[in-house]
Image 1 (cartoon, rainbow, N blue to C red):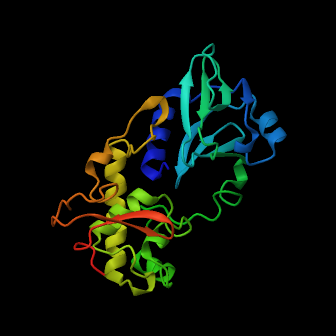
Image 2 (image 1 turned 120 degrees about the vertical axis):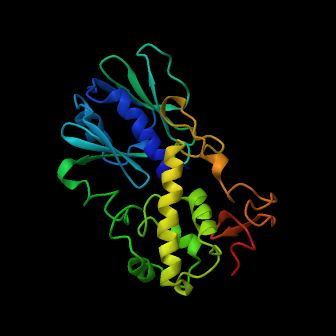
Length: 271
């Protein structure tokens, strides 16, 4: 699933391609991706122009003339820019016809969602209203995390809770906990202020580095236009089961935490 760095990379790639282009028409081949009123979505998006592209957590936010088009890529969603006359592929479920090209949403698993939101309701309406702080928000402090983490729940699960910190997914949670020397099974209410400060610092460092390298490509992630991320070369524990820890030489283990595959070093992240 694309996480914050991958969505940021998609945003930056698309900004170079579609700004100031107008949506002349739209074809929807799978209605399940449209999360708001489908007829209103199709009618209101015609003649809207792409003004800017932003990101909030794992959501892409296309600023249009009168609306925001909010898009969540979920597991397999991708955007591609193609010529008007190129054939439509099997998994291209939504096609925006622009001035001189098409913007196509491709999703093999059909899990992605799109919302058309009025400009004055972006932060108060679904789906952004319940998101937590961005990793670089000044309000993200150790006191805030101590309060939010004060639960008898594994810290790995809490890091994936988008209402606490938004943008962290499975890959980066593993990396953040490794660098913070925190076992993924440790309960949130057992963390200290120092632990929380380490989480904040390493979250920012891990995500910033991944953005620099264009995101992490594991299995099927590519950004728009097929740009492949290279941050997988920097991963310390995620997807490295049975390989040796780059810091201490111990064997990396894989366990399940609340159903999510979780990689960690038993020595560097002792309970």
